Length: 422
Image (tube, rainbow, N blue to C red; front, side, top):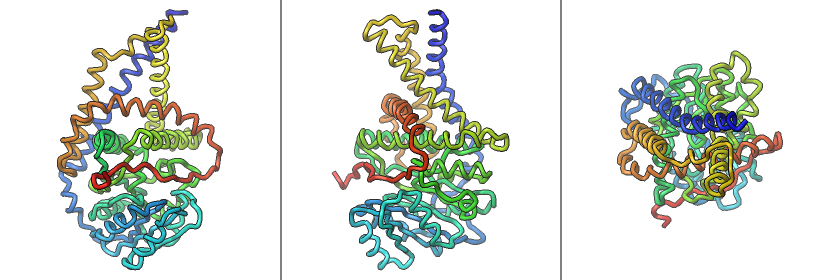
């Protein structure tokens, strides 16, 4: 009996070690292939491909308590190089002066329309409201504290030349870099988010568009019923809805958007917990529909997320065994000492740094000076892998036991500190 339990324990230990290694090299291979095929000969960020015609575009900016950032965000949009751009800002029941700020901006910029909701309805409801108030063919959605590059709309609009493209996700870049957590996220957005999206495009399906910057074809949104108001992560949900209906979701690394990210452990925990719970909520919602053979191209994305959740629980179990056996001296059938990093820790750490280096290399043409953050990333496996595992462990039951149909409303997030704020 003990022998069989020990064998299971060894198998779980091997899985905990080899799974992140396998995924890291899979992502790197896929991202490098994507770069070779799609980016190697791409122009500079300020040299987007010329279009025969420019479809009408509306940028939707849902805002909740964005008094401090709305003017900068809208002002940046007004410098966009895209012709005849319409901007719709939705004040989603803010309790600060966001509405008043937006009204003043609307008097200054004729291209800006302001919609004010009396009560906070959630980001998805704000997006749906704005979508009904424009006839634009393409809807670009950004957060109320994001700064969109002047050429980003050109890059986001170009893939819609292909009729089956339903959405295009942009490339968010972190601008809060005053603390260690901020600097780690600079590397994270290159080594994981950008790298993984490139790899997923290579292998078939994208897990999610970026909620902070993405473009959608209006007819595709209409086909899937627009955004769901009860999902914790409306960006993941809309991505799966589109791809389940066989719309293509693209990644455009040249569509840059500068964003604020948490720089406190509490803010980062709340954000990543919402991401983990939201992802599992989408999986639970799509569990039965995705069993159909016609949805087979979504199976790898589905399996990857389930496996990563299983890995998180495996890590938790091995950690508890390690505490019992090594720290408290309680006999266990599984040798918990194998969790202590030795040569395996060196292999994982080296692989992680290699993945970060590849991600930064691919993004180096988009952002100058990126590699100066590379050596801060030695802390990434310890800090963010642990955070990912813990938020998944907590987020899975949070998603599974969440009341069906409960509206997902947002709260003001921790946006970190810009240098001038210090």
